[in-house]
Length: 463
View 1 (cartoon, rainbow, N blue to C red):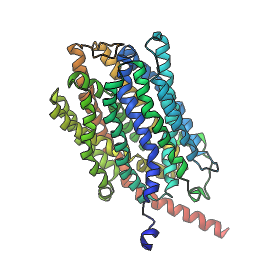
View 2: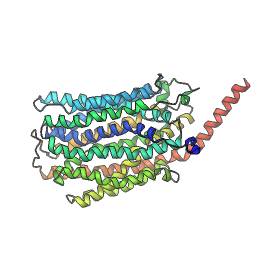
View 3: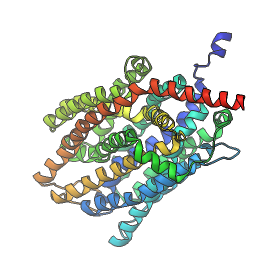
């Protein structure tokens, strides 16, 4: 009993679930917005698919600036609550703007609807989500005392909790959507059912998890913009990882699942069943810590992305055959596991490379580029979905009813759900192989960093 309590690598259950509370809340928000915003805009607000796509892509212009400042802000924050913990309040802003985003009226003019969607979407992703992305890794490192084995467990096992949380929404949302989302008022009610409890859940991390102040003891708290630009110039692995996450979010951002199950499968309620059956993948998350003893994070990226690529091929071949499509979807879901839940471990490696180059570790700023490309990728995916559907002749509606679509639109929906995400998976595979070089260099870098620290300490002692 005593040995278990004194084990530094033990992950306390209560602390683990407190940490995952915000991740579950944010995963639910992403599921709702990335999966259902487009069809809400086209089939309830009566906006053209091309316009919606253009608005979502245009909002990403702001992300480059806000990401840069968010990383700088977190790296230079020092409060009685800690460095990263104060920014957890942004989750409340996320849900408030989500409620407002789905509160537009079909009776508004086209210009007002466009401005409303643009502003709310931008507030969610360019402001509040940006702060949450920037504080994630620095907060994790300080909440778990920079213990790499514990952080690996949190990332791996935490993926199970996040997936279950997202699954609960993706299963129940289409079912309630079929009942409630037949009007704008129905959509508002539907969003409130999820937003209010999930906002409360999302703030629990801040309430229950403190930062370990010893992590920053004896370090230079000040990070300068010059050092951030030096990192962006010289840390090529930041850009490789950014490319991976950007492509991943493009694939997710297409958000064509609702269109696919509405117009190809012909039953939106089966979209929820897909999420239920993806539970078969959860055991994979339990073996991640063991797998990481034998292969690097980048290697996991490569293996799981190749499997997902096979899944996308199966989905396209399956067409409207639900059984075949389901088999392919289960494989494509594997793309979400390492890419969605092991990013903190990559950020730690990027920070080590920064320190090796003589820079501050900058865990907050190290995720700036990948955070930027992730959100831009999500916007590009959603934007392309709308633009390509519009070009293919997709028929919109303000009644919430299912319109008859031309063959060109149906083919485009199939491509958006399989072919285009498959291309992203192929490119991710190539970049993951390139990222693997960083993981192989980490032990050598850490040894050199420790050598420098020892030399500095010896110099101070002699002085």
